Each structure stands twice: as C-alpha cells, then as structure tokens.
Image (cartoon, rainbow, N blue to C red):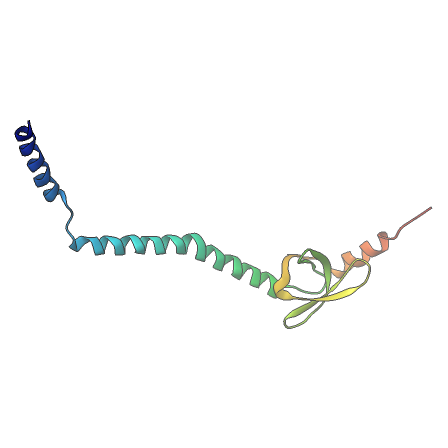
Amino acid sequence: MKFLLLPLLLATSLYADEAAPAQGGGYLQTLIIIGIAVVFFYFLLLRPEQKRRKAMEKMRSSMKKGDKVTAMGIIGTIFQVKDNTVVLKMVDGAKIEVLKAAISEVQAGTEVEEKGSEKNSGCSCE
C-alpha cells in the first residue's frame, strides 16, 4: 500500500514546484498594488477635502456686513468684518467676536431686511 502512494506523493511535489511563482515579479506586483492604493486614497479622501476647504475659504472671504452666519451653533448677523475675526450681532442686540475659521454657514442678507425684521419682532402683549 505504501508503494502505491509513493508515486502519487512524488508527482504532487513536482507539480507544486512548477506552479510556484517567480520571486522577481513579487516586488513589482507589490509596488503596483501600493500605487493603486495611494491613487485610490487620493481621490477618495484628499481631493474632496481640498475642494471642501476651498469652497469654505471662498465663502468666508465673501462675507459682508448684514449676512446671517452660523458659528459653532451660534446664529447671528455680521456687524463688522475684520482680518481674522467677525463681530456678530445677536437677536437681543449683544455683540460677540468670533474667528472666521469657526463660521460654518453663511446666508446672504441685507441690512434693510434686518431693520424690517427688528420692527416686526417686538412683542405685542395686549
């Protein structure tokens, strides 16, 4: 019985040696896979973030007096624009200064709309 299995085991080991991949091509294949991964991560992560950052920078640079903004959950109207900061006027008339980088949303508005809304926002407690 052992003699019958011996040729089968020898034949299997011969075919296994022939099917082994060449060692020289392994490095090239690894470099190609790493290159594909780098390109994939660039288009999936880095490029969309760069586009979003440019859009936010454009939005922040186009702010002007009278625009309604949201900064860290605080909603206010721009009262004054400085180099790195913005002075916001709150609903109750208080003014706070926040960094431009903290502003997450800008809605265009005019001072005429703000003055009209202040006249109508008074409480008519009759």
